[in-house]
Amino acid sequence: MFHVGTCSWTDRTLIEESDFYPKTVQTPAERLRFYAEHFDTVEVDATFYAFPSERNAVLWAQRTPPTFLFNIKALSLFTFHRTPRKSLPPFLLKTLPNLEKMPEELFTQDLPLPWLSEALQAFLQTLTPLREAGKLGYILFQFPPWFRPEEKTQEYLRWLRHHTEGHTVAIEFRHRSWVAPANLPRTLNLLRDLNFSFVCVDEPDLPWTVPPLCEQTSSVAVVRFHGRNKEAWQTKNLPVWEKFRYLYSTEELREWREKILSRFPAETEVFVMFNNCYRDFAVRNALEMKKLLQGDDVHVHV
Image (cartoon, rainbow, N blue to C red):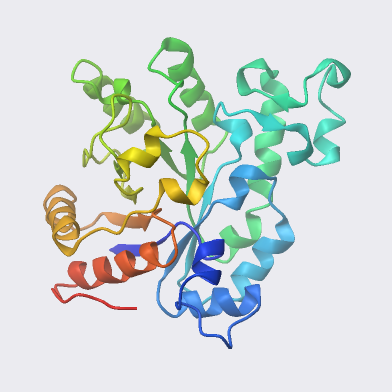
C-alpha cells in the first residue's frame, strides 16, 4: 500500500509563488480540502516548532476524506534540538523543576526524564482526535547531526519506545555514522527490536548526511525526499526554502520507484513523502511519483 504526499500544504512559496491552489482557494480549510483531492497523506511540520493544538487535530480530521492520513513531526523538545520555552504551553512550564534557573531555550538532555515523559504524553494527547478518526499515520522523530550512535542515545530510543506504545513511530537520523558499515546492522536491529520505522532519505551527498539506503525495520516504511541542493545545504544563513529548492527529474524518481518496489514486500505500508518544499516542486514530484508507483510512466504537469 502506497501513500504519497508532501511535507507541507501551507508552505508560503507554494501558496504565493505557484499555481497549485486555484485563486478561489483562499482559506486554510479550503487549501486542505483541495490538497486532499490530490493526495491521501501529508506531513505536518508545524508541530516541530510549537506545541500542537487538539482543536487543530479536530478540524483536520473534519476537513479530509475518511482514508486521509496525517503524519506528525515531533516537537523539537523530543529530538535533541533547542526548544524555546515560549513554544511550550504554560501548564507544562509550571511543572518544570527549577524553571527560573532554566535558559530561554531548553535542550532535551538537560531536562528531567519524568517531566519529559509528562510533556511527551501531553503532546501525544493533542493527536487523539486524529487517532480516534483513524487518520494518524506515523510520528516522525527527526534527530540532528549531533545525535550519534552512543549508548546514551540508544537508551533514549528505548525510552522513547516505552512512551509511544501504540503509535507508529518513524526515526530519521541526520548523521551517517548511524549507517556506517560498522554500525548499520546494529542500528537496524535496534529499530526492529523497538518496532520503529527507519526513515529512508534522499538528500545531498555531504560528509555528514545519510546515504540513500532503502531499509525496512517495521511493517511501515517511510521514504523522505529532501532534494539534492548540495550547495544550499553547505551555505549558512540562507532562507530555509532555499535548502529544499530542488526538482527531481523523472529519471531520478524512476530509480527510486525501482528501489521501493524491489526492497519492500507487497504487504508493507509505504509512505513516500516529498520535503523539497519550494514553490510547487514537492507537489509536482509527488504527483509524478504517484503515477510511477501505479505503473503509469508519464510525466505529470501541474
